[in-house]
Amino acid sequence: MKCNINGIDGVLRVIVGIVLITLSLMGTIGWWGWLGLILIATGLFRFCPMYTMLNVSTCNKE
Image 1 (cartoon, rainbow, N blue to C red):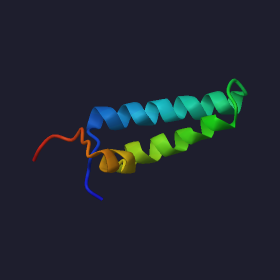
Image 2 (cartoon, one colour):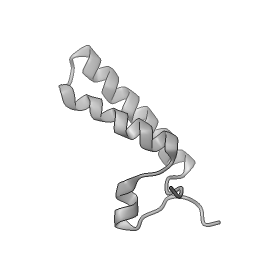
Image 3 (cartoon, rainbow, N blue to C red):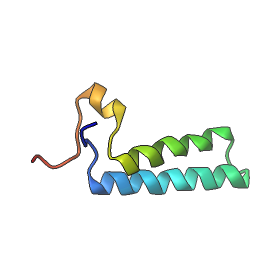
């Protein structure tokens, strides 16, 4: 897996994922808040399969 998510993008994904899961646990939103797990995983691994399919990368060119 080649990195295709930069630091800022990864941090934002983790934050939004945590917010979604928290809202789901509080009952504010439904079960779909657990999709925040996907955002957390992609943010931590710095790899997004959708970015690969769309040929997008937010990583700096090395």
